[in-house]
Image (cartoon, rainbow, N blue to C red; front, top):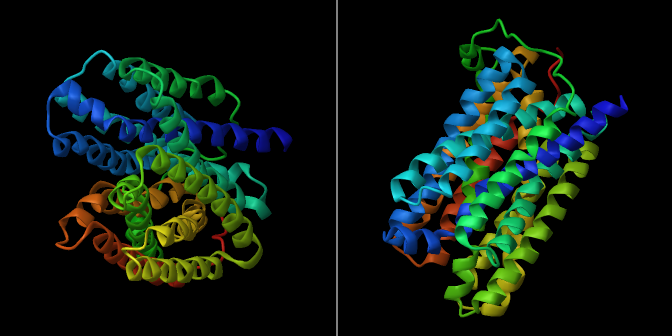
Length: 379
């Protein structure tokens, strides 16, 4: 039993490595522009393609995990998100960035989707949401590692470092126990069958809302601060502190979900998010208020902390990987792949555009979260 819980810790460490990898390119867009001689819009497409690749990777690897086992699929994901980063260090053309970061996103979200399901097997039953939320919160820590590292390492060395860091997941993989089930005999279409259709519908709405809230909020945080007149160094420090606050919020949300139920905690954090976004929209010109409201909006995203674990509890064992990742596919594709573009598409100021998208995302989360079942499926 102790080795099982230790396996959950190693699983979370691999998840952290994947988070470092996927966020690493967001801190090097300026270098991509300068080295490939393309406009910022072309360079930023690299980020969108990594999320689109992630949507497909999470779905494909989730189905594969139900076929060949979670541990085998996890190893494939680690290699897929690590090796292309090393290759990218020696191919500095924009087309190479597009192709390789699509593949990297495929591997990262393949790992993430499997990990949400795997942690359900490895974590103590009364702490599944806590473990899952801490694991999801490691995305914040991964972003911080990427931001700090990129500030003092040259671009090529940075990519080599990130790629080698990702490969540390291979030795960690050996310490993870075999999953208790592999070789699904059920068709993935069962996810949309009569018994699971409701779960898939409302889980997908929650997923879309979660990604649509979190990805634009984090991706545009630095830009928001710069537009409000803050210096680059202050903005970087403030975003780092906000991400650490977010990590703490995720951990607390998971513990609360284990104690009081996921639905209640989801609605509570959604309400907090709605209040904070309305305050943000009402004080667009107030620099000082932004420093209070932005961390509050980050903490409010804690409704997203345990989503992967919650979804995996609602599908029968042979469909856990497939079912969870079908839901996450729509969130990654719409929220991750197009969330920032949707904010930019609206005709108002960046702050007001972001407020509109965040309110929309919270509405989706409230609808999805209020309709998902609380109880765990018996296998």
